[in-house]
Length: 304
Image 1 (tube, rainbow, N blue to C red):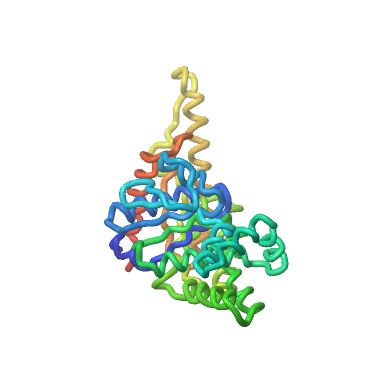
Image 2: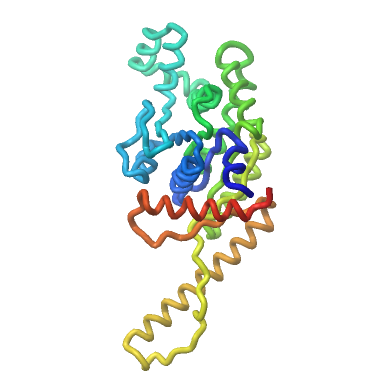
């Protein structure tokens, strides 16, 4: 499949997964690939955005948009700032300031669960509708919160039947339910617990949200190495024992990941995009370029 066609399939791509599986890295790589293909790209942080900015060697994200790289804009979306902007756009600047200073927004959020998420998703919807960007990549909360984050619109819409909140929730539902406007990329690593959580998340999103699921991104896949089963006399060289131990570890790791990849394929009938393990403790622009190239190669292997 042509990567450009893949990237234009949905104007908003929400990247979600269990904490620690590299969903922020995938978000950054997806934005990098889109920019390389000439798409005006916005990458959005929800949970702080510090890690996302660090991958581009940029200062921490704020609510104000900032250039992270050529063709890539980054910003942090928070419910409080989204509410202030919404109220100010409706001529209620003084009210918005009082809500925040008094802590009333916390009371409202407690009384009506899902309001905070609706404010953020409503801002994403507004950005998508503005036409300013060809692709918006959302680095979503970790998998457990991702379900409630995306299901919030349905809950609020069922709870509130009239008024601006209902209109906002209905608009978010329309966004999430239109494959041309929005899809979700779920990210995992080839280990038992993350795979289990991804499978559960996928079915929960289909049942409760109805959003389109894209290919499953499997991060941190060890490449196959030949000759790992070669026999070596441990006394033949000073490093022979260490080399044998490393070969056994690598073989066990690749066997484990093969079993998890097979199980994932049997449990979830979605194509898999497999990204390489990065043997680096410091991931920045260069490493994101490597992941983006691997992502492009894997997309090309997908059926249209």
